[in-house]
Length: 498
Image 1 (cartoon, rainbow, N blue to C red):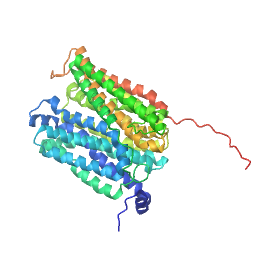
Image 2: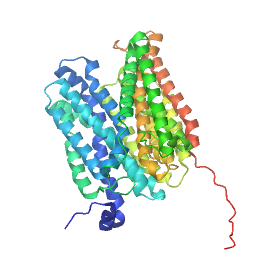
Image 3: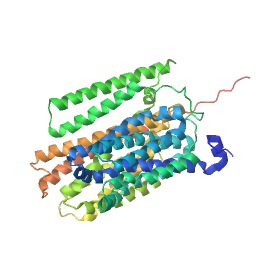
Image 4: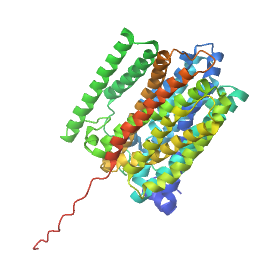
């Protein structure tokens, strides 16, 4: 008996529960991808000591992953059209598995870095797929609930990952971090063989005649992202000819990329050959355009705060790393619970209201840090971190739904890919920007982080950095309000005389 593989066959075999089985299958792979992106941070000091390299060079295991993941997101629509859901998904899981095993057995740092880039490429391709599945497999009134369930599972990975990773590094060394993704990859390969269809996003079979990959645009996106990240890193050493040159080159290449995408989108609209990585026609939809702005700013605030909070607690409040892990754990659990609740709310309440509420809570949590001092009770610190993660919980399941609900079904795959790319680009910039602003404000207050003891001046520098993040969230609220559905005007029925 031939195993079911097409979407109609799988739906007939598993019935109404099939869409939930499909969601679970892609969720396991996403957990593996996200875990591989966050858990490595706890192993960077151990890696640096093992290979006798500087902290800046060791940090490239995180930066290389981030850059590869950001650019690879743009290839997801093409790969789904060319190879179909199952082959694309299993291919990324095999690449993630190989990267984990190769990194775990690596005997030199270049091989570790290559393994991380391979993992980043796999994670980038796989991340937009769950949103595409939810938009296509679930009815509109179920999409919020599905996004909430998916988000809960995925968020638990970065919430629990660093704590588990710290224990693994202490007990077994940095290699255990790479091996941690192996069981998730194996489980995902088994699940995808059973539940992920072979079809392409449009519902038909994958085709070798699918539009060709726009390799020049992909190279431009990769080069522009790399130059931008390097320019931001150079700013840590102050403004100079090198940093100005990198910024100028990044802007020129990004502008070239945008112009190329516009020309290819216009050619496609005229029926001429053209396959843009980001179809500019998507931005004609107000909700998608505003959602992209929110995604970029939200990415900056999310990833920036993820970097800034642990540094603030350790070097500003003088808390130990294990104590910081304990403080952040309740906020991670609060985020997972909120996502599940907010997902159900997204099916009943206006998306723009939920996203705006989340941004407001996030902005408030950053602002409340201003009243924290060296002798503030620890429950207060736990409280504002929990409040911020509750805000994130309202944003996460709602943003993709609100941004993509106005897109034509043919654009959903590209929409999911583009909005994830924009969010990650914002996140990459946010981490560097937070580091730059913190160093600037520390210098203005006459302090440096190399001094062991903290001081009111150091806390003031951190406070001003968090105020910048709060202002970003308030700014994003103006765009978030534009995610509301367009008003519909009743048109009287015209009766024909036929």
